[in-house]
Length: 228
Ligand code: SAH
Image 1 (cartoon, rainbow, N blue to C red):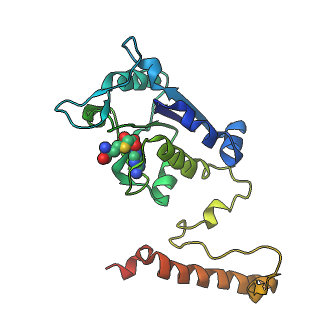
Image 2: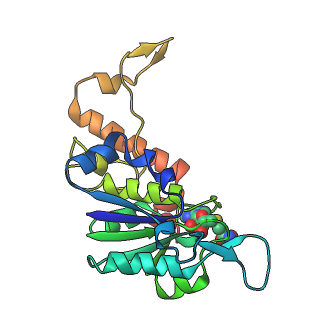
Image 3: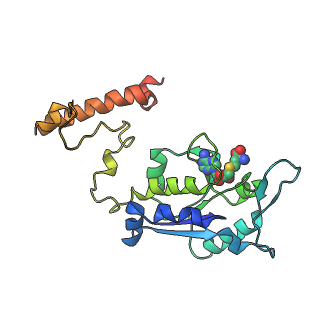
């Protein structure tokens, strides 16, 4: 898989991809993440990528031309499955969306800034718009990093324990059960007995019960039958 991220602030994306799981995934050749500085595609002499909004109003707008030139140059090199614009009013990121996108080959993620991008970018150059939640960030970079992380950790071979991603919250329509590690007792706070019992069937049963209990109390919407 390949993810190309277009941004006017490439440095914001340095650290998320240079540590831990995302770094290892790239080192193992399971994913390529390429960050593109929009300024390199600017056409004016000051290399600006934003301008005042037509009609006035506070805040700058990202210009279409550098974005178009950048996307064009990427598309000249390979075919993309989606050109995603990170946007607070986009489709809400969910686990099932991450699952779906993890099956794609090449993705472009476009990060907005200021007031966002010229609307014509959204109308003509973008195939999909994704939001990471109903709140406004100052730029799309952190959102693109979140989306990339959610996707990359699902790629086969990225997580060392193959079953790990499958047992995370949302994968089976349930949130994850509680987890514990040593010591078995700390300040009198004990780990549930069953987890120490060594009885695998009871342990699995307990985990399922806890997952159901938690989902009902924390994410009742994940139970479709209770929504209707
Ligand atoms: N004026 C816009 C907000 C622009 S925020 C509005 O009111 O909708 C600047 C940029 O940050 C956006 O272009 C987008 O790329 C990114 N961004 C902000 N919040 C986001 C969110 N919740 N999810 C994804 N991207 C977001």
